[in-house]
Amino acid sequence: MNDPTICRCEGVTLRQIEKCLTVPDTSVSLRELKLQTRAGMGICQGRTCMPLLMAIADASGRGLSNDAGLPRNQPIRPIAMADLMNVVSKPERSVAE
Ligand code: FES
Image (cartoon, rainbow, N blue to C red; front, top):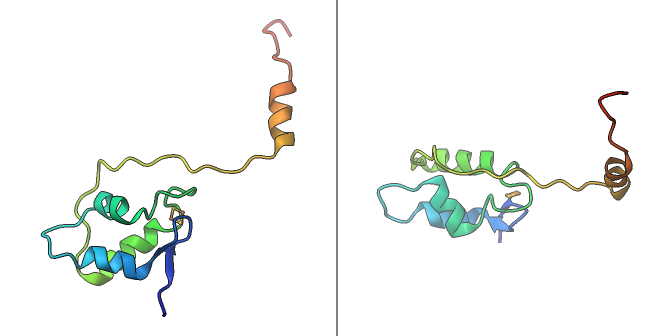
């Protein structure tokens, strides 16, 4: 019943993360954790949940193997249509001005 949500964007809970970390394997990488649970694949691209995932992995004693090659995408942020229109409707300045 008490299963806090770790990744709000993808609805991944602590139990799901712990289940992934308890698989008797020699190593678990952040990439595997991400692919198995979808944690970190949401709209914030792990900005919120990655520190939690790392802390959970540290607390489990498993740690995570080196993930130097893990690609990170830019977080998607909402933009107001008015801001977008200002960017689009502004005429470009010429070099002579
Ligand atoms: S909270 Fe996990 S991807 Fe946003």
